Image (cartoon, rainbow, N blue to C red):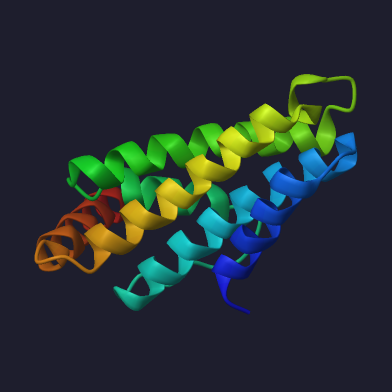
Length: 143
């Protein structure tokens, strides 16, 4: 499955939804669209990440250690979106994740994340990004 399908589904829910469950689901699907897009992009650059409970933090750490300003910002945005996804999925007493305006804003944030990751991971800076992540990984594994 293509990660963007989650994004398209989230966009539909946030635009046409009427129920709190639809807005919560839009936020959740939007996060997973960005997460899986990041996961796939890292894999294509030679950084396969095990798909387990640690994968979310691993994607964040890889992007955050890319030495690319836009990817570092994207890592922070993804971490924020993950927090909001957790609110939507697990904190049923929260009302903010049941509002259409918030769902739309977070779905737009996910689209922006995908755009940044795609642009930067396919840019002329790709070799430097790969080198920076490799350097970080070598320091982490030996230090």
